[in-house]
Figure 1 (cartoon, one colour):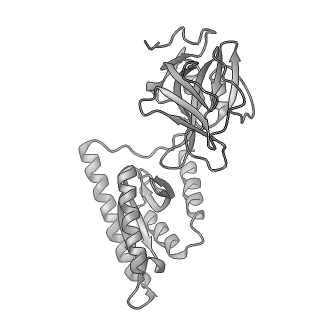
Figure 2 (cartoon, helix red, strand yellow; figure 1 turned 90 degrees about the horizontal axis):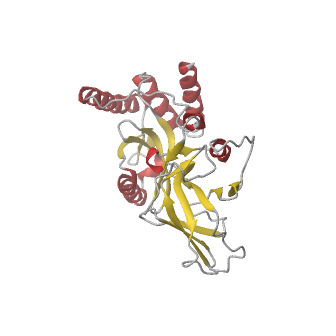
Figure 3 (cartoon, rainbow, N blue to C red; figure 1 turned 45 degrees about the vertical axis):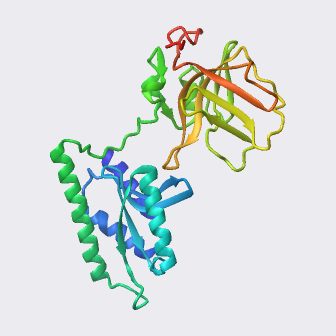
Length: 301
């Protein structure tokens, strides 16, 4: 079953780049030459930087290195300068190291013969092998496993509580609500009432152009500030009697949309205005079984 999962992953990954024949050739050959099911790879990996979004051609998470297949448009001086800036931003944002593989010669204005490209591929593959050997010798290498359980709610269902320190991340709202006994086939709203004193809130904590809201989490994780982008009045007044069990909806640096448990928050009447709602962290954990959501919680002073 595991091999079937990886085979399907391999085929799906290559399908992402079928429109770029040289990139497809290089990526497929790299993976064929390595032929190592313990080495994880990602094609067209999304990386978010301060200036926007980027996609790297072939990413190896275990070694934090990515391969850039430079085709003809990378040969201009302007593009070379942009590539340098892009690589620096990726390094600063997520610590990934680039490796360039040029398949085009700007001097002759032609693509390189496959025999020469193959030599470059062999050099890159040897670099990956060396990195793996070093990692194995240091005892830090973890073989790639297709882990379906990373975002599965089942791992939390038998627990009395969950806490922020556990880094609880789920992919769907229905998975979050399952933790509290709700069984839905689909749920796509920003709010779910649990009982008279609590509700699960899914605030978006990233800038979505189509959204009218601008929600932000303070750097210390203690406050969520809710405003409208245009600064207008928030029509619905906050409910000061409801504890907000927050599963923040956000995109991480690799572009994955996730719901992460951020704590239990309480709306602060003394800090709220008509244009600004402020919610303060009151607990870093929440009880999943008992009606008193803070009964087993680590309360904050």
